[in-house]
Length: 332
Image (cartoon, rainbow, N blue to C red; front, side, top):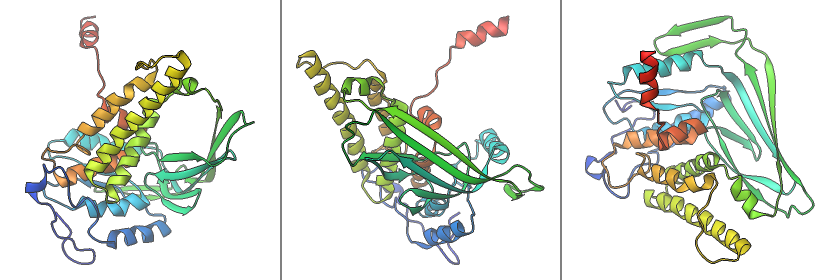
């Protein structure tokens, strides 16, 4: 049910006749009330998770602004998905978690952090505040070159997370689906350092191309573009153009090296990029011309915004299992 009374009251903005339109309206929030509320919660280190099991329109486009800033997760479930909800709620209650977190990322001189994607509050150019951190969420960072890296053999990146651990909790009480936790954990810092070799050889870069990392960044960029007001068509075209640009650069680089002008087929994991992008174009978050409930579409967009690599991989390309293996095991 849509919150239609009191502060932040909303009204239905979904037109069922427009669900299959090429341009989807009302993906942006109706007002700034929930964004202001999110900023207030951030100051008190409060995070929000939202589980939706309603069949009626609830204006997730606006409500999503609430937890998109302070973090957590929006999960849209149907009534029949009882076991899935049980597993998700159980995972939510028992997973490891860190409170009052701040994240700072540094990189080699000549490189800079261009844009962050995910759910957080930006305190400064390289400092992100998150009410909590957990293993079921992720952020993406776009890095740009500001200077020539001549003479530099290694590019280094370092991410430091300062947080309060959940270990040593003195009280844990469960009421309905809410968790009340009085934490007396330790203030800890976790540091990850990544060093990558610098090369001028484009073929080396393409051979080491991480397609899952690339598609995760691309999906988060597309979500940000869509939720910031760009049309769904623009976001879809941007994804297609990214694939065209990458493969055009690949073909030019390899053609110069092999002295040929013919189109060359990539042999590294980059060859899977069109497959993942096609899966994203057919996903309910970005598909056009099909009847998709507005809340379901927004929930899918918000999933891509905070989901880790493994979740995005399964959303776009399903896992395949050998059925004969299970049959053989059952008869052993």
